[in-house]
Length: 338
Ligand SMILES: Cc1cc2nc3c(=O)[nH]c(=O)nc-3n(C[C@H](O)[C@H](O)[C@H](O)COP(=O)(O)OP(=O)(O)OC[C@H]3O[C@@H](n4cnc5c(N)ncnc54)[C@H](O)[C@@H]3O)c2cc1C
Image 1 (cartoon, helix red, strand yellow):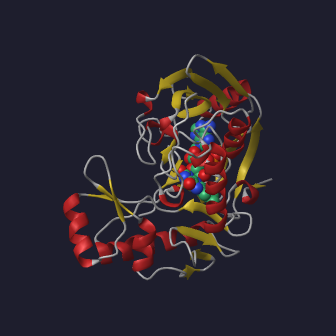
Image 2 (cartoon, helix red, strand yellow):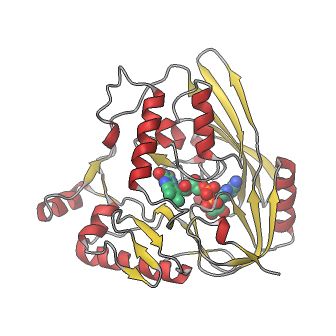
Image 3 (cartoon, helix red, strand yellow):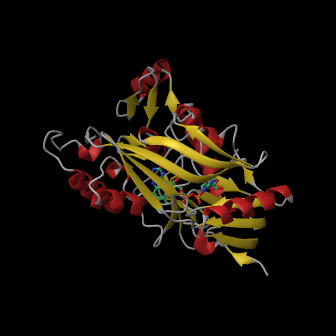
């Protein structure tokens, strides 16, 4: 009997899988994933389903990670938090605030699990996961080993890590250890946080502001299915940036440390005239061009057709290639939108 995935993905796509196993402790997560891998069965490790788009029924087993537990170790200048993969990210941010452990507040309200956070190195409002990542524990499926990687080994980048590259489909993240300095340094140089005085702001104020802005800006997946930003902000060379800026005075771009520029993908989509357009039930959000939404009956195919149309139209106008941020899942595994 196929099992519905509708409530297990925030886009609300109506697809099914052959079987579903929910694991609630680390041993079970390790045993189940290893067994499925060794039996060469199609398997999808799923957290909160907030970064996946199902284009088809999944012909395999979905392993839903619901492992729980947080331990805190305190040394002179730092807190070390070891968190099980199935913990909810936003609840972790709230938990840290109640314990007066600060640093994660800029990343409040990012949906999903702690175990998925390192995979695309989640980030928001000027702070990325890797800033506080101390160690990642994962099951390496081809060797069966439980491996620990430090921050460097994870090869974090903008929405990138080794878990999306060499270790794609080979690593089941079981545990994350964060290292948070006791001396809190607020990051308030980004967008709506800029009105705060870094010398006189509290972590709670940053948290409240981030929550308020996100709730007023982003559509709630419970109301309008979505996966947050659908495209990464493209990074271009200085030369390309200036050539675009000469043509489009109000182009939005941020200089990077390596002299490249990160362009606002939402600006490109909006200025390509795509805000609000739809293919079937899949649409570009009326207010946030970077967010694709499910108007009600969207299929994964319609989402992909819309994404392809956006990529092509933006390329034709700006000669910039957008890359989707979510993982697109076909009937037996990940596929690409081309
Ligand atoms: C409204 C909204 C706002 C968002 N805002 C942001 C934002 O500000 N910044 C940002 O970076 N992201 C944002 N996202 C994207 C999303 O929240 C993150 O990518 C999040 O980390 C996904 O977590 P998840 O548990 O839902 O992952 P899932 O969607 O369940 O899985 C994503 C991928 O990770 C894999 N995976 C999940 N858990 C594990 C594990 N334990 N081991 C191995 N592989 C695993 C899955 O197989 C899949 O390929 C947003 C999404 C939504 C819906």
